[in-house]
Length: 141
Length: 112
Image (cartoon, rainbow over all chains, first blue to last red; front, side):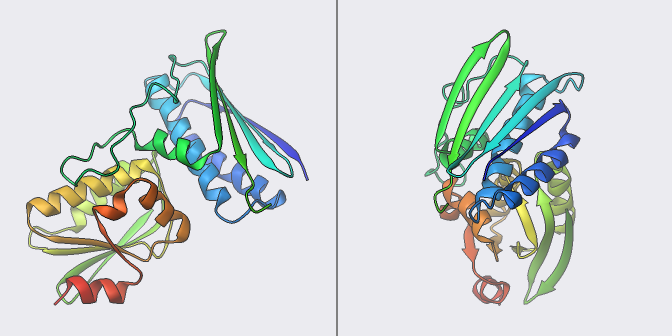
């Protein structure tokens, strides 16, 4: 079992649909454990929305790339964009997930969900690109 | 994403169908604000037909929860799928918003 899938997407929010379809298809053919399809969609959506809205400030005339590599043990994701530098490991504040309703910050949750749901994240800036590599192990696989 | 509204035992029940993500969270926010009347003092979001929510949707839930708290209105969620419940648990939202297993249980708790 192993398959690679690459997507090159314009920096527009209406492209999220293509991400969901690709993840559904890959997850099904690679027999990912239950719950993993949802987590991978969420991770790609959170990061994709960040790239579109923050990385490029809503400018739709760029592209970003997603490569999904699924094998028997794990899924490896590579995200590549030419937006402004953003390292999700250090540039996003840790949200306070214990504070009360009134004090709860509205932002920062997306990246926190990404870091919590995935097993490994590494970031590098290369040739004016953000390159984020993510590993999700198939716990039940 | 679609919202259908019902009322039972003075509880406004908004059933959300489909997906809430970064592309339609604003639409979700507007739809909820439109559905909740000024006199509604008990609001329940039924997620039994919600397939997906991410941080963009959580943001809207938080804003609605705050608004209703200011009005001393009750607010609850019910019927979350396992992956959606996980999103709420990781975010710690399960500690600030009451979550019930079924619509009947939620209406029983917050209704009259």
